[in-house]
Amino acid sequence: MTARLQRARPGSPELQALVDELAERLGRSVAVDDPLVRMVCTSRHFGDEDPVRIGTLLQGRADNATIRYVLAQGVTQWSRAGFIDGRDDLGLLPRYVVPLRERGHLFGLLLVVVPEKTLAEHETRAIARAADAMAAQMYGEHIATDTRKADERDLVLELVGTDVAARTTARRRGKELGLLGAAEHVLVTVVQLSCATEHVRQSEAALWGALEGFRQTRSATGLIAIGKERAILLQLRDGPPGQDEVTAQSARILDELRTFLGPSAGPVIGVGGRHPSLDGAWTSYEQALVAARAARRLPTLNSASDWELLGELAVLLQLPEHALNASLVPKPLRTLSGAHGGDRLRDTLRCFLEHAGSIPRTADTLGIHRTSLYYRLRQIQEITGLDLDDGAHRLTLHLGLRIEELLAPGGDGAV
Image 1: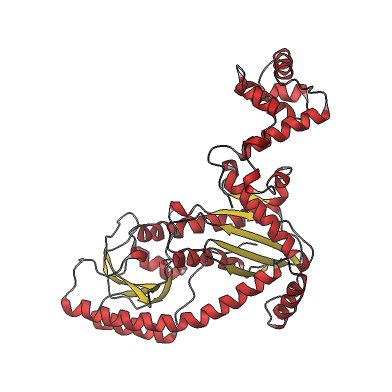
Image 2: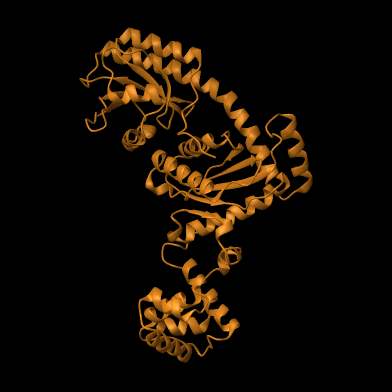
C-alpha cells in the first residue's frame, strides 16, 4: 500500500505556454505551483537556478522543509504579490510570489526567481498581466476537475451511507464508470481536521493532496470524498492489508497534512475494520469514525487510531458525546483517586488488571516486591470496597480506568 510523496497534476500546454512566454520576456526562471507549493509548470533555467529548483525538477515537488517554509510566509493568504526571502540552509534563492486568484479562489502561486529582490516596473507589469492570464486558465481547468471530484465524492458518500438501495445503485454505477475494479476487500479511512482557522479551500486542497497518492497503489484502488473538515478514503484490494501497511499509510498522510497545514489544523486519522466485500464499506466507515474519535481523545495514539486495535474502547466510544463524561467513572474508582496515595494505587491497579491479575508479572513490571504488591492490592480493596478476585468487580474497575483515559485533559475533543 506504499505511495510516493504526491506531485501536483502537470499543467496544461496552454498554462505551460504562458509560463514560458513570461520567463523569456523576463530572462528569469519562472514556475507555477499549486496552493500546496507543488510544481505544476516550470520554465527553462536562466542561470538563476538554485538547489531547491533543481531538486523540484528531479522529484516533481520541493522537499517538505521547503514547502513548510514557503507556506509559513502566509503566501496562500496574500492579497497581492510580494517577495519571500531566500534560505541558505534550504538552498532557496529569493522569489517574487503572485497568488493566482480568480473569483476569490486561490488556484496556484506564480514564482519568479529574483536573487537581488528587486524588479523593474516593466517587469512587475509583465508579471501582473501574465498572472491574470494564468489565473483565468487555471480557473477554467479547475471547473472540469472539480466536476470529476464531485462525482467521485458523491459515489463514496453513497457507498458508505446507510441506505441499502443507494449503496446498491452506487456500486453498479461505480463499476459502469470503471471507478470500481474487480477487487472487493474494502478498507475505509477517515481524516478529520479540527474546527479551524485554516481557509476552507486550502484545507480541502491539503486533504486531497495528502490522500491522492493512495487512490492508486500497487495493492489498492481508491476513491476519495473531500469535505470542509473531513475526508474519506475508500480502498479496494484483493486481500486485507497488513497492520504495518495501514500504520505506515496513516503516518504518511499525517506527515503530508502537517506539511501543508498549520498546527491549528490538528489532523487525526481513524481506520475502519477490514471487510471482505464492498457491501461492508459502510460498516468500515462507521468504525473509522469511532477510531477517529479515539485518536482525538487519546493523545497516546499520536493522532492515528485503528478500529481493530481499540478493544473495549470501541464500545465506549460509541456512546453519545454528551454521555461520555465523568459521571460514567464508577464511584469506587473515584473514591480511590481521592484517597491518600491514590495516583500510585491507581497505577498499581491498572498494571494488575492489564496483566490479567498476575502477581509475578505485575510485580516485575512495577519493579516492586510481591509483598509490597499484596499490600497495595489490599489497600485498593479496602478503599474501593470491591473484591479483586471477583470478575465483575475487576471489569467495573478496568472499564472505569479506560473511561478516565478518554476523559483525560487534552483528550476531550469531539469528532
